Length: 360
Image (cartoon, rainbow, N blue to C red; front, side, top):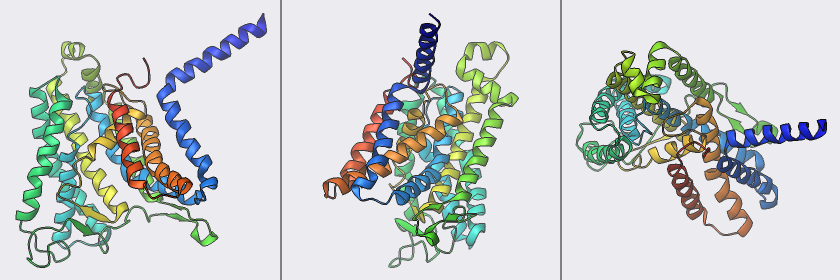
């Protein structure tokens, strides 16, 4: 009898763990682990793949973190992330235009991007307060429209720095701007762990990971402050929050501004790891992988945590990185881009159809 009771209790605990983690996420995790198992059979260097996954995590994690404030306040997922990205791009290009180099160009890019993020985030938050209930649909149009508008502005704004403008006209920004001599790998190279000297193709961008950890801790700390708790209350139960004297519109506005600022910082972190600034239509769909990552990590449209950010970014970037490389090597055909599109868009489609973060 005791053995039967213990067996049932263990099964119950196992079932609770499965329900907590979510069956879909278990399938995705299992598929990612399968890709790692197939690495030696495909003739792919295991250490290189680990290094790629870690690097892509460090590039994208801050933009996924930008989803958390708006989810907590009930504004939904931030499909308007391109507003934050535009703020970061303005900060980056103006920092270079003003002559800053090295690590200072990264610091000044954040400083310059901040007022743009506050301005754009404030206007975006005001708009979302006017159309409560339809935030995610409107946000997509806002983001796409902002990117399209900036496609004209990148040509019209009076940039003159030779490293950024088109050579034949001396005006208008290039599509891709190299960060060499500016803030290329400015975070990634801080305390970087490079095992190439031992014959292992593994480089860990310690500085980028520490930077993300600091921002994640500050976000966690903010959510436990009086303002953060009020913001969460607005997202969980607006009627209760209003009865308690909390200004719903103010809390939502704070969350949108904070999310937009994190988007601006996130694109700067992405650029320093990637090594280039890409403008015009390049940021058009960057919100979708961030949205998909946090949902795959276990968040829902009204609940998100730092753990969801970390788990989701690892799963999403791991699959997008590993799958094309391993499958290409196994079938000896170069269909990496096709696989990348199928995997990334398939995961986004799956993520956007989820409602309760893995629970029915």
